[in-house]
Amino acid sequence: FSAVRTSADEPQFDIAARTKQQAWVRSEPQSFGDKDFTFPSALCYYNARQLYSFFDGKLPIGIVGSYFGGTRIESWSSSDALNDQTCGGIGQLGEPATGYQARRSYMGTAGHAHSAARLGEVRNETLYNAMFSPFLPMRFAAIYWYQGEANALHAPEYACRFPAMIADWRRKLELPDVPFFFTLLAGYWDAHFVSTRAAQMHALGLPRTGVASAIDLGDKRNIHPRFKKELGRRMSLATLQVLYGEKVDSFGPRPASAELNQGA
Image (cartoon, rainbow, N blue to C red; front, side):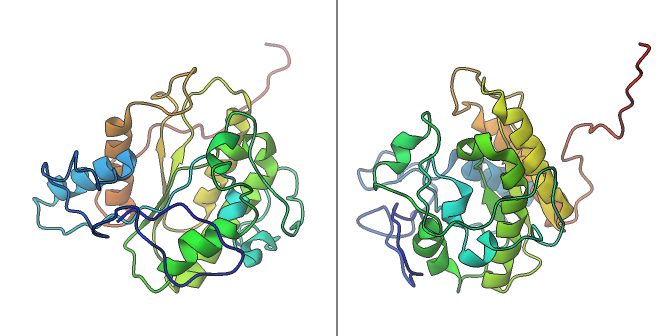
């Protein structure tokens, strides 16, 4: 199921599908190329395919896609999340996040504004209201998040906004333990992505979270990395570890400590 791109000033209780004929489409060769078929997220598709294969086709998997390119995290956050100064309960990283600024328009940086411009202004909360709130009655096994580029100029705030949104989504879904997975931003040329990745990693302080790195899969001239199949494989490893308790290596080496030697 792929949700239509839309926004709203108040929480909605239903959302239309992008497809005209049917809401749910089977993942099979006959579906691809149909005029009413809307392609799902490549990352989610390859992740699901890897999981389906791992469990020998005995695990039914449904993908619900709700995405809107070029948008900031504030538009996907409720007022409760935007007002959360505890950062989802894990505290600040670096500079404190600025307070909630009601109804401020966030269009992203110049390289990201074009997608949001299709609906005009995409303000705080409006995508949460229109593209997340309708799914609150559903029971999800896991949530996957691929965003951060449009917040690259505000990494310290993102380090708080991101875990605050995760914690709030779990509360609103009444699924406090639902695993939450995200993609570490790809190797794009923008130097601000470095601090944004550090801000993203702060969310791992929340329980039952996982990450798949795309830093070596990117293209410094293309903000949309092409190698989604490998990224999906990595995400499936994180899912197997966090959601299903499988003993797999889901992430590469991480630095344990650093020391500055003035005489070196």
